[in-house]
Structures are given as C-alpha cells and as structure tokens.
Image 1 (cartoon, rainbow, N blue to C red):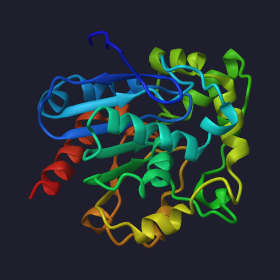
Image 2: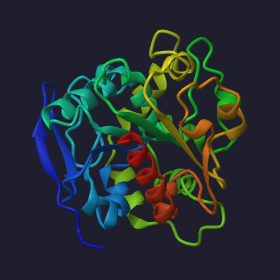
Image 3: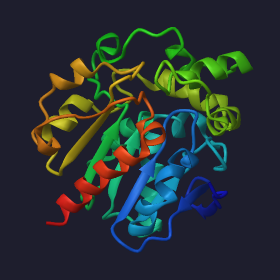
Image 4: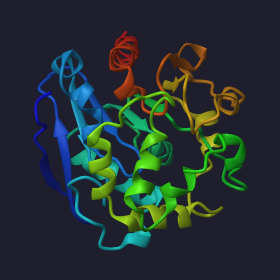
Length: 277
C-alpha cells in the first residue's frame, strides 16, 4: 500500500485536506465516519476503482489533516459538516458526483441532500437514518458499551482502542493502525459537539429525507455489524432504494469498505454503472 498524499483546499471557514485518485471517469465523493479520515478509503483510492473513477476523499473539519474548527459549536454538527461537504464539492467541481458516506458521513449526506441538487446518487453504509423528534437511537443502533465514546471529548488510549474496535467484525485479530492514528488526530470537540447537536432542532429528519429522496440511494451493510440495527433500516420507506433492498456484505462489520474492499468496490461499480445507463 502506497502512502496517500493529501492535498489542501481552502473553504470559507478553514483549510480542508483531501485525497484524490488518478482515475478520469465518473467522480465519486467519499466521506468518512466519526473520528476517522479520508485515509479510511485507501482501498478505494488505490487500485482498480481509483484507476477507473475520479475518487475524492475529504477529511472532515477537525479530522485527519483538516484544520480544527474555528467555531466548533457551529461546524461540528450535521448542518455544519454538510455545509463543509457541499462547499468542498463545489470547489473541486464535484457537485455532480455520486456521494458515498460511511457512518457519520452517511448522516452528513442525508443532511446535505437538498443542497446537493446535482448529485447523481447517494451511497450510505453504517448509517441508520434517524428521525428528528425523537431520534429513536435505541432502535437504530445496537446496544454497545463503546457507542457513547463517539460523543466523548477526551479519550484515553484504552477508549480509543475500544471505540475503533467497534468498526470491525467481532473476531478481527488486529486493529489497523491507521484507524488508531486517525482517532488520536481527531479534535475531541468534534465528538462532544456532535453529541450535543443531536436534538430535535439540530438536524433534518432523516427518515423523511430517505422517504422523499428522488435520486438513487444504495445502502450497504456489513453482516457482522456491531453498531447498526439492520432490521430498523429494513422497515423504513425508501422509494429510491437501489434494487429495492439493502446490499449485505458477509464477513464485514461497520467498515466494509476496509474489511471487504473487493466486494464493496464491486457494489459501488455496479451502482455507478447503473447510474450511467
């Protein structure tokens, strides 16, 4: 695996780091999860998918190599992150991309759908669409002792390992170092303010968003997911859901793009190909 080289773009609020593949085909805009970075998509950026398509993976504000937010209470919320994603996509001439969001990244995309008016399609994984009032988190997520760490300001090394371990299938033998590096790089305020922003006025009702979506939506789910309840997602009304069903990946947990990249990349390719016909 080659070292990824970050590029920097300045938006209205701060500098944002991003990674780009060499492909010249359709643009695919990738958004990572809580306390991670664009590097989590290394298995997409490097290899056949990245050679075939123009992949862009940004570091969210306060994550990876992007600047810490100057106004954390504004930026570290679903609307704040959505605004950053929309601005970066516009600046990189990627507004007509297919947008892919992992976990928090998926929630950000659902927040941004009405601003991403030229998007060709949306892919979310590790993301249960949640209502606004009340959010019903107990149904959307599986009970896990480490879940609350994603909203905790200061994490010990032990906490970081516990949280990152939830990204993968339970029997994984070794946690990838990249994910531990990324959680250590993340501004703790990003977690704390995100947690505080999950209130009735803090974000769009995501169940309404997927119910009213007019562009194709693909949902991918690792069969050994430790955090997200697939049965909850399966009950939602999603009229533009690709092929009318959730796409499952065996032997993968919350991060199927990392654990089963061949299968994940194949699904993405099928979705992209389908969009172009």
